[in-house]
Amino acid sequence: MIRIKILLSIIIFSLSLFGTSIIKNETREIEKKILNINKTINVKSIDLMESELDFSYLTSPSMIEFLISQTNKEYIPMKHSKIFLKMNDFLNLESKIVFQNDKNEKTK
Image (cartoon, rainbow, N blue to C red; front, side):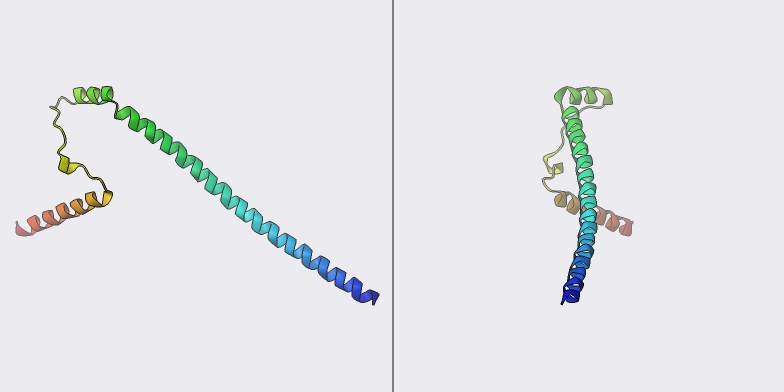
């Protein structure tokens, strides 16, 4: 009877020791993935802030006037048809232009 209790306690101890090491390794891998994701989030947030700063600087009226004065060309406002609300609209128009160029090359 005592041998069965000792054997049973050794088996339970071994299984719990083995299970603990498996869970610990999986947790360590998950923590590494979380750290990598946090690093990429931080890098992207810094890039976003820099992009917003660039955008606000480059689109300021004084900067636009300065750039226009530097180009030595007459400023011509953009047609409304060249402003796209979606990227798909731009890509569709671009593919049409390429398709028309291909037709023109075939006819020449």
